[in-house]
Length: 589
Image 1 (cartoon, one colour):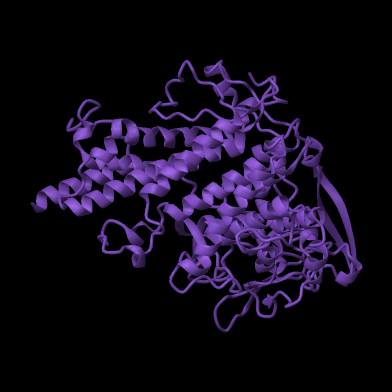
Image 2 (cartoon, helix red, strand yellow):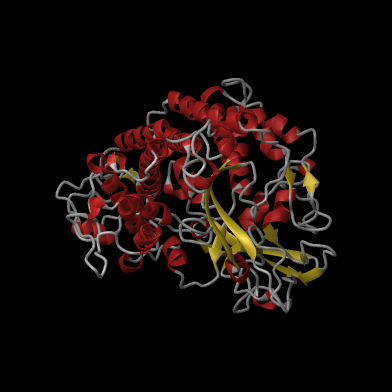
């Protein structure tokens, strides 16, 4: 019996690390008999999960911020930077690997779902435990297909060269896109794509536990469900995905008929998730508490991804003077988007913004996200010693112009470990997490959708857009420094002012999306779903030059896209002639 268990264990390990239809060296399974091996069937789900991004430092997260006005890659030759300034190349498309990855994951999921293969497979000896596992894995399959399909839609949904608003091809049968393309591979309408994804979300919600927490097991076996699934999708994460899909579908770029009911659907979907996090979970979420990027157990998390222990963020964001390479840097436009501590934008006289001291008295989120001239890095453990000070002024060690210094004069602070020091004898790496969905995202989604549906102060299901946005603006912020932690003021006069009209509130919530979720890969998609014309995303990206107390701001480069939409990868247009290319990319076919 022990030998058999060990054999199955190593079989499962092999399944997780190899191509599933590649036989073992001893020929123990092949394409004709692999269904006799339950570990292989379950491995389809594991493989699809393992294909999800493992870090914010990737093309589709922080990398997409560098394709907006929030950031840029330092190296001018970076494919994303070249793409964003109008030098897109068919053979060097920075996003094509996402397309290939997503379809590979959907292929594995469809293998599991075909003919109810996964649902019929016996995984465990105990009937009750096996039934629970079957149910969870079936839910996982629908959840993964919905997640990857929406990722494809988020990147490539758009108006085709035929003038129609198109989605992406979502196969529901196992099609290995690495080796072939179906003859009928065409792009359905955007609306049909949304319906398919929402249907998969609903199927996932039907099968999955509400959350992956032991207290919700209700007698179910601990070794099958509950916290053991902490990085898998659950019903709540699928409800959050539905809210995001509905929000995008309601947005101007994808809602040409300005259907207000879509905004209301999005608001109600987001509100359900907000309420559960506040009252449904044991103890509830305290919306005033700060959020920790290194804590996978923080109550705000709705969908948790990979957890790693490395120095990727530190070496990518710090300058050479502190062991880094400054690969990606914030823009002046992002810095200017952060309001003052009293909530007013820096363009308002009541903000008390002083142009000669631009980094004094800012919103605490600024200090948690950006390193600037004379900002310091303190160790996050007692005695909280000073480890490094940025000097980005003229002639400073971190000033623009160096090979591994920021061309904008700013550095990313968000995500970096303040316990990491390259000069330590024993360098301490920190735990880094990637969160696919968090409570704040749903609050912002609700605020935006509710405002567009009924205005800032009319409630939907007992909550107004204004009240939702107050959650975000008045919470504690962990800045990681000795003297810059803060809480938003009890009163928020700028929120009051903006809540007198839909238009003013919409501008405010869009800016809150920007500062609250910077470097999370969200702005790239937001600015496209909000825009009515490509001129709205073709904007300058600037930096600062500091000489004494004189601050000079200059444009470093301009975003230059031919259209709001991304091109369907050139390879796909060659292999699937039935595909319609997105508008503005007629030559990519």
